[in-house]
Length: 183
Image 1: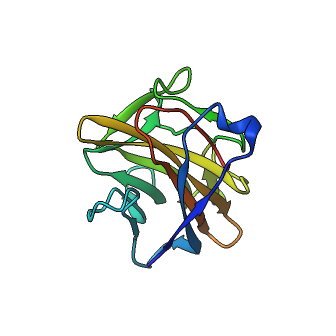
Image 2: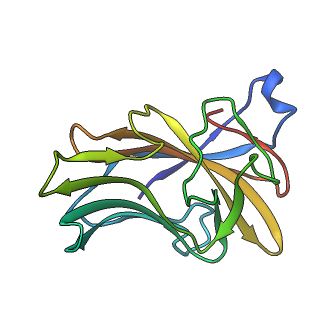
């Protein structure tokens, strides 16, 4: 089980968000044909988000798609755009309640985060705005007692080894305040 850690902010960043709870995920790996990674982001005793890989076969296009998924419950929201993609946040990106331009917070999300397309007709290829990211951040928002708590998950995409690496996550201790990714 991940260990809860406490960390304090640098003075310059502290004006943007509240104190955070940090959890080290010990570089857990999301990979095909392995159990899903599930996290209780706010330590409330329930699963808030799961990362897994699903095989989808398309006999008409003669393709298989290994889809790396992020799935949340109704109380956990991800930022999602009209193409059902999630933003890749850089370190020090401010995550605000209102979200990012072009994205909306959606609870009970089921997002294809990245996928490998295996075709009979053309060479295999990968699709996603998360390709080749190293220690970038997936924003999330949790609703608890009618209050919203923002946070982020630090991730690396490693398609050479066909995996996503989960490094750590953090969630605000105070409701309805902005947070800074990676800090």
